[in-house]
Length: 140
Image: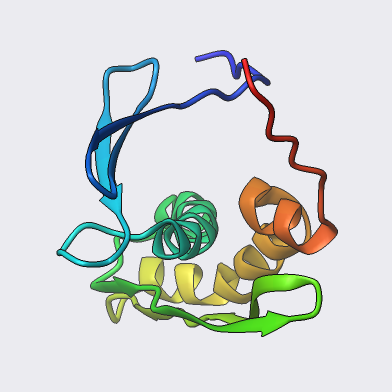
C-alpha cells in the first residue's frame, strides 16, 4: 500500500463533552473529558506516542520472533506553566519477552536498536512532539 503523506481525521460533537473521531477507512473512536470510561485527548496523545513506537518495534522484532509479552505502559506529568498546560516527563516503558529459541534470541538482540531507530527516526508521533510543530486552529 502506497503511503499518503496527508493525514486527516474528522471530529464531531455527539453529546455534551463527548466527541467522535472518524478516519477515511471508516474507523471511529469516541472520546471525552474523562467523566466516563472514554479516553481523553491527553490519553489519546499518550496512546499515539506509545502506539507508534510499539508498532515500529513490533515490525522490526516481529520479523524474527512472535513476542510472548509486548506491553508499552506510558506516563506523563501534566503541568501548568506560564505558557499554558503541557505534558512533561513523558516515558514509554517497553515490557517485551520473546521465546527461549534462536528466533527469540534474534528478536532480543535487535530490540534495543529497534527502539532507538523508532525514537530517532521512525515514529512520526514522538518525532513531531519532540521536534515541535505549529498547530493552527481557525474558523471555517
